[in-house]
Amino acid sequence: MLLGLGFGVLGVTAVIFWLLFLGVQWAHTTFTPRLTMFRNAPIVWRTFAFAISLAVFCLTAARTIGTRVRVTIVVPVVAGVLLLVMLALLRVLQLRAFASIQLAPVLHSVTERGRATLQSLYAPGGARVTTEPGGDRPLPPLRAAVTWA
Image (cartoon, rainbow, N blue to C red):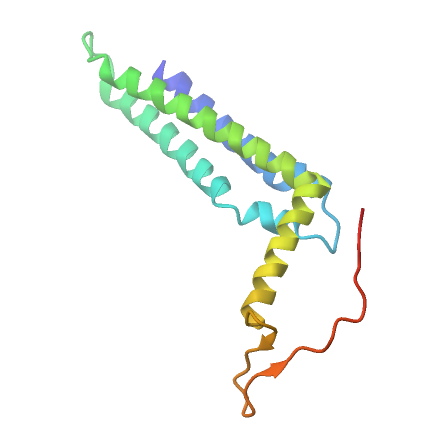
């Protein structure tokens, strides 16, 4: 069981790399941050590390057990619980990959990054924070409002 689980989990790494390079890149164009946002997400690398560590655990446990007749039940139970955790992580990873293919979550992420950048550049109250001599200058007046239904 442990050998089958250990080698089977290695197939999960293929799914992770498929999602990372083929699934998201399929919807990736030159001027969109989709691939880099998905690539830099911590869930991608944590799931990959968890899958590799689970495979190493299963293969090492199978190698250590060897041909023993009596083995504690704790090792297969731990492997089964870790497999369920890895399946949950893989599901979250799939949902994140599918969200990065769709347009609305990408626009939301770009908007949030833009707001964070603007908040770091402009102080609340309409004054721009500068390090140049002369201090804070007020923002220019609003010329037009862009609305999108």
